[in-house]
Length: 116
Image (cartoon, rainbow, N blue to C red; front, side, top):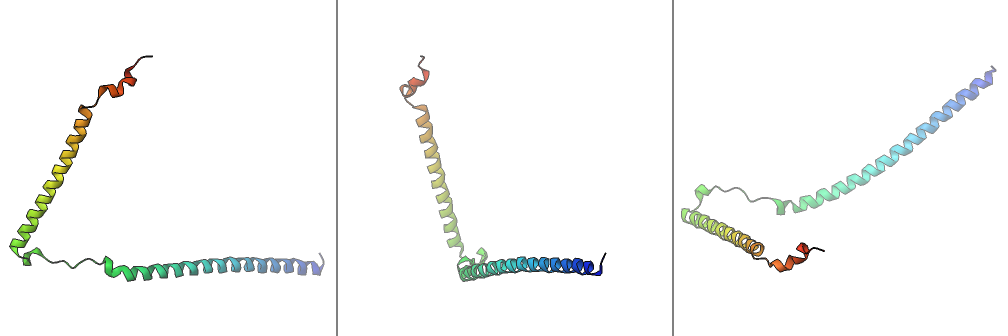
């Protein structure tokens, strides 16, 4: 094999290596640009969340031990009464649905029992 063939082989190998490195550099650059765009979007979302943090913050815990007993009793009685009203409304709705099922007009469904 002549000496110049080794130069051609090594030249081709070096060019292939440079081509691969260029391809990898372009792909890495595109990924970095996409990551930068995502970081920008994340920063905007974090800013919106930090602005709304005061709205989302819960009220500090206050023990009922330090409240007025009469006020707590009135709140408890009101809560029990509200639950009783809601329970009665659900019960009335169930009774209405049951009456509709029991008192259905049988002639309304006569087409289902008719034989052809």
